[in-house]
Image (cartoon, rainbow, N blue to C red):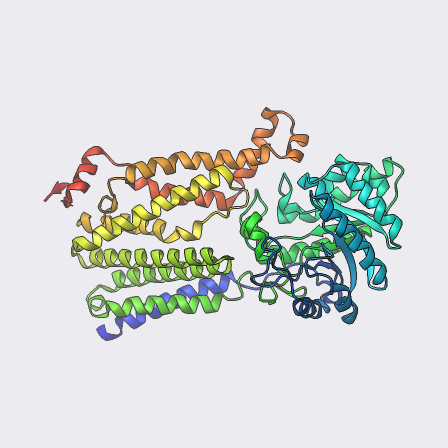
Length: 570
């Protein structure tokens, strides 16, 4: 029977994990199906892996042809943002695959470049009038403060005089309210409504309602000026991966749900829409972090992120990830198979459950960090971080085995564990202060520190289980700098809350809605406290820091390498 003890315990742990993962990843309803499975319009930026307008590596003709063919059954129209930079063949491929175009010109802060872009736009729109149905002069130029309103209006008028198609300018909805003269200049009103990015972010449950409210607000403003023109929501969507803002949570199901809800609103109110975007854009992570790279209907490998019809899974790869976690746990158990056979069944099951938790954490970290690494140095960092977590998990399993067996741990293992925790604490300090000072586009790295935080709980449990404190007490992993790092983490946690609060209170639309400090502060703090990712990060660094707020005598004992048994030292 002893020979079967480990296999039976492993089977129990595997079944428990598989059942939980299966339950958490059941298909979810995401709203009514998209009619015919096709959207009215999709933002079209055919940048493949390794291509970026920032690096001046523009799409190749074969990329444009491939992507146009790929999305022809998913949309009726594509919106482009530039007529140069490799995009010149786009109208021909759009015609070939039965797609209409909203052709855009990219305007910036350089007049010579803008002049060339405008002339190229006019020429392309006239040459491809059968495909180019609408023309967009500039995208969020006013939001970026790249030019003044009068210069922009001059470009709009120039294009209107030279093409037959309706002409517009695209920007966030508040820019139209800030510069109401735009209502008279454009042939149709093009506004961007992105509930996730609002200065006061909107939860997915209220996102469709928010869109309706903004559209009515724009309509009322236009009507008050005697303007009655069609409205196009030029950009709207929801990110599938990235940092949470207030109650706005990125996610695959939320992304699918938002698009389907938006279509219902558009059908009820009779306005047009364009979804941002067709494909994930890794190059956007340079300015917008992970969340900026993950707004696509298809990922960078051109695989669907979610379907437009039917139920949606948050993580369709859960079974593969469970399998890898089980393999890692089985490998760890094989390394200590003989000694594990001597453990009582309860302690053995607890040890194997811990191994499965560590395995699941490593697999999740490896999958997420690699999928959100968009440059060679980010990939190198991800590999190093996974390796560091794997090493720490191995050291923690050694500690757990020693505590379960009632034995001591060799000095080199204790020293290695101490070094590992100093490394993760120092890294947590860096991450925390980056989030505090400039965290708008940075993700909360909870998954990177899940194993270190879980390890603190394990060490505390082992201390209760066994009086051999050097083998299982957090004092044993405290280095001489750990209390200083703990202090920095404590201060940094307040900085994260303050930084997130300030980012809301300093935003233009937020100030317009809450002009006084006393009125705005509780609202901003409310958004901060709704951010589960932020709260999880604060909890994570608190767990890392708390064991190292130690008494002076405990510090001296740890430095002397003493082993306390029943309150004594040897």
